[in-house]
Length: 164
Image (cartoon, rainbow, N blue to C red; front, side, top):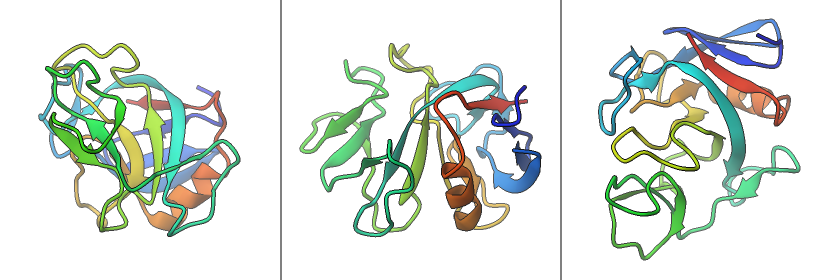
């Protein structure tokens, strides 16, 4: 493990020798992640992108991409674009990236089951803000908004998410 890796336990994330409280999936940490189980997949995952709401926050780093009003994420195992960013209108099951709440104002995208998704293995393992302390996610990693912004400005493309 390197100092610029994000190392996750059930209650904390360690990055650059600092600890941050975090939330994980309501299904706990799993070695056998499947779509809809609410689990956070154990393992080492690359960070492959960063998305942000330009109408709500400033661009956090030069490589971050804006979330547009029609941006979605496919979570339909039968869709050929399963676990990919897609655009509305979209006929398959999906999650809206441009949400009314601030949950996805800043999102760090991992390579869980990406880019060549295995149907049913799970989609969209992101690092995003938490709803509140101790409130679980659907499988993602949740952080306090200020901590997420601090981390986002310091990660690099060689940083990894390591879920213990």
